[in-house]
Image 1 (cartoon, helix red, strand yellow):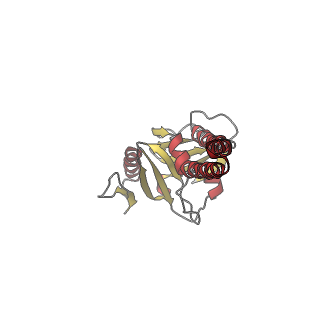
Image 2 (cartoon, one colour):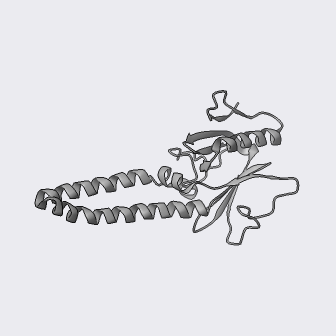
Image 3 (tube, one colour):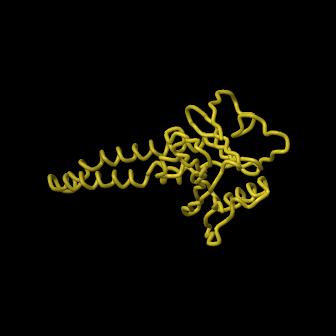
Length: 212
């Protein structure tokens, strides 16, 4: 597993260098912006907090000057809430648009970073377990790696499994059709390694990809 900063243009989307002879690209994708905003940037919580402020200020204004007071006290906070939610969504959009996840016949690549791009290269031989968490029409595939290599959570965020900071797990975050991608990853790893070290859980609904 490796990571490197790359200031030059990619030879192809998500690829800082050409694939070696015999290695095939199987899938590429990026996070869904709205799902990333909700799950990683907590857009829903921020919107709820802003709504609470609006209601509180409106109630205070109503007590002072009736409906006119409610409008005068609450309306400025509506504007602030819209700006705050817009900024959060903008951050999620920038992160999603600058990200390219790739599955090849030999490895997983995460091309991440809106300001400073970095590529993480994770061969299937270094993946111990891959878990899928489904969220409506999107899902996250987290990769537990072998060995003692650790990747900084600050470098990976938000492309990591939530709440696993001591031993970070790189993740394909908030991708559409995640169940199909998880199956593709499992099949590619089994083919590459010539043994079923990654298998789908019998209760795959859409389920779990787990090492035996």
